[in-house]
Image (cartoon, rainbow, N blue to C red; front, side, top):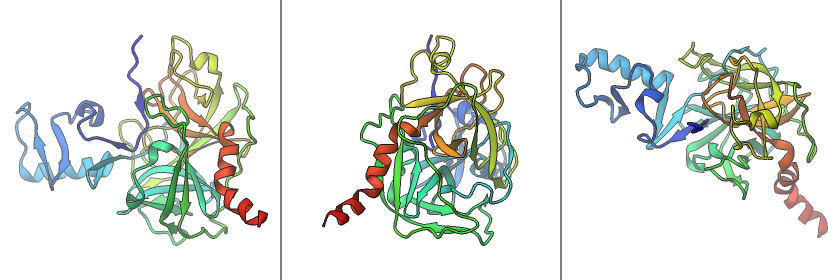
Length: 314
């Protein structure tokens, strides 16, 4: 069985995905480039310039944004609800330097953010925002930091999505307060039992086809799915490695989706997973796939605390 696996990436080459997949009902557009949209192959009559501008604006606001030739896809939690303001204080928004949200992450140290490796769009394109609730709306609780260093796990494989984990060191520390806190992590090698209900959170649209703006933080509860069921021939057919965990309902309808990448899957108050990839969003046959944080706890501690260990030896 051949599966079309769509990685929940914020960044893709513009021509690598079919227009129908990117823009349902707008497959006659090539995208928003150089200030305008182009009709393709004359498949439909050219709309008026005013209508075209409105369509382009819709595309830009609800679906994609280009930043220096890169395409960023908005996140969306499927089947969830708006989180209580400032109740998930460790979640951060990874944004472009123009303020466009494209990935989530968790503050695990005042200087460090944990996220997915495929959220790496380069130091020069990124800004980390903590204490946010509604992205693109200034609320006075936000803290901003530029990344100083990106550390991708050495085993990360973009083809298989294995070891999809990255640490971001900030140029300046975040201040812990009533809006910003650190995320607790599980111990190395600890697992989560099948059926355990966890919670995934992120910003963006509330349905696969779009949803409402502004982009308020949303959250949804999903149960852990066994590796055996997730790896079965009826699901991911052996593509789930020991560094991944699956979560979702048998009936589908509740899930993280593209752009929620890197955001936390929290079980019992600890970040056990990072939104990584999947086949569609909210599909009953294909649960969401997350990076298993407990498989990388030792590596996380080594990266963050190695400089302190060196100092203590001298």
